[in-house]
Image (cartoon, rainbow, N blue to C red; front, side, top):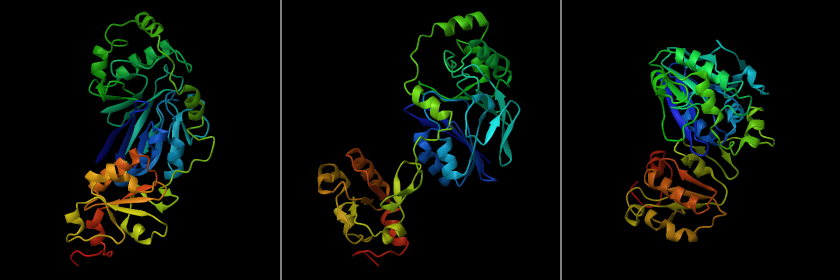
Length: 357
């Protein structure tokens, strides 16, 4: 089975794409974002996929790639255009190359114009293509910096991307209006910059008068991306925090396994957010748990020490996850949710007070 996920970074309006082959459990990521690496690793773990490569459609100016972090954490290869002039990649791509993941592969199209090293990745059955900034939904990437060329981009889109089958779905590198996907046919008909009977001169005039500011992070992002996202300083990416071994879920929650909580030997605060009746009920409670029902947590958060780790617990882990997010908004940094709540704690045989044995 083919696995496909479209992920979004709100800060830079960047799409990251996960493509996987369930039979081999191999996957690739297209256009990762540095700050979203924990999210991407969590999704790979939950889907039980091995990341074989991270792919870059181009050298980004609005965010820093997570490629280096993913290689450190997952052992994946970094692949991008030979014409990108980036250092530290494992594979430099040119037109016609293939990137395999299990029984599936992506074929490389060179689509320069936004930058010299822009690539489009086309799925083996031509059902979808990942265009980066070469063509956006009813738009295209700018051509006024980073070796941009309106002439190159016009021919990349009109002679290459538009030569894919009409039904091919196009997935862009960004969208600023909440749109997610388009198709070759739609863009050939309706793209106001490159579709229909628009000539080169029409397009050049359009692009020459965009008058938009440069990306805010360009001075930081471009040099970092020319290093494939490697930080100037050491930046470990692990599931470890100084006070405990935790797991970061795709839902964005730091979790602690029951066995890890049982073995935890540092000072911590255990907060049970169930109702009083549940706290005294059949599931019992964990020794030293402090009852603060979820609907009282906001007004009673001052009872907790923000410098001492907090572990949240409820019946199943759902309400306590809400409690965790609430405390995070109030500035708590050392905080985790008990995975599976009291149901899992009891199922795995760990000791409770009161309740039914």
